Length: 555
Image (cartoon, rainbow, N blue to C red; front, side):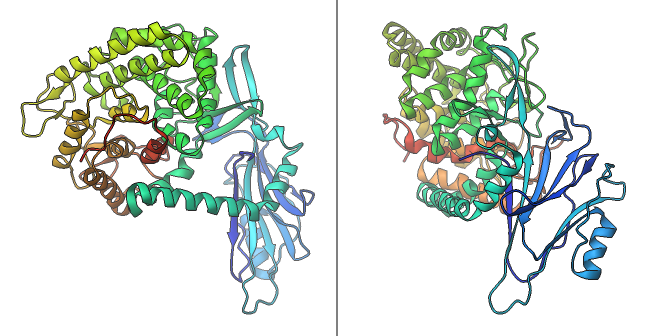
């Protein structure tokens, strides 16, 4: 597998397609070439390449390739839209000419066309394949152990040129299509077993979006996978975005999670982060993973320490890679000491749901931190640090007992976790409970699972359960985390309600994770689009690889 942003488009039927625009940059040109393995292509790029820069969430460097099969029946043309389209409308063919005049997209709109003469079509369909791909040689700046370095795209390790890659992937379409169909079928079958047809619709919709945020880089011996947060901001390698993404990695290939964690460990272990708690992200402007050696980052200390502990152990459990835990034991212990100090009584701070604002004594955030402590106890046991393991598991169990006293409202007919300690009129989606089951820790009492599962059906709105009592909006990734550890009936209610929302929502962009549970629309002033956190739709499937534990699905 050579990860690369190729987009084949299979065009069935009898009509040759009309040419269309494939320009996004301001200054571009085309070259029609025919040396990529029986593949003809337009090559389109900015005259001024701005490496590692973006405008309107679109890359300012690299080359686009628009490709199709080279044949005697193929003609091509680039130029002004009226000329290229007019030529095809008048003649049914294009002029085999190139327009190499760099200009803005709205200056005689540059258009890049192919025309294929399909001949006389009888009862059998005649088909054609088109492919669109983006080529970048260097794709990320990374502040690692050896300072700031440019990191190549992984595909450059396998192909000597861009055109070699274009030709390979074009000619590999049939095999790739078979693999893709098998993947789709596996996801659909596994999802239907885990949660029914509605659940299969959620996982099938989420897969491409989740992986669309990733860039595979460096070399086969030391690959890094970088993640772009998308729409909420331009951060790269955001820890609390990788966290909701990570169930899809655990389900498909846990090693992908390690490739995402590696840059975070490398940067901080090199001393490029001045605090004892974990960093929030590796940069505020994708694809610049240059870190925050000045400490000027979005502070979510309890959130990120808990996330790193949980994800690192989850990876090691599923791959039996205890050497990875040993390699990073020192910094993991450092972060765990922060959790010991801060998790039980969280200071006023934001969680991953930063749009909701800062709050002290957050019940759900405290739970993540306490689970993180128990996760580190397991890390200690796996790496021969038995004394640390015994010490920290005792602390975690002591904390969880106190947490139940502080954060659960038992003085009601439907006991439930509160948004914050002592706030009896509040409730919260207790999605961090998922990590206890995912890791098989047996830390959180079964009664908490049963309690939350019984409570959620009492607070459903038309399109789901609000994130907490401050607002009517929710996040579908967190709803699926809750569904994964709920009873069969509550799980089904979460899944069917989200599926209903997807079929009725007035939102008109790519799959959002944040929406209003009463209107189904975006919340006022907060719009999230196409974010990788929808990897959380795979929370049910990720539990299939969880270590055995005392966790029992609520009845």
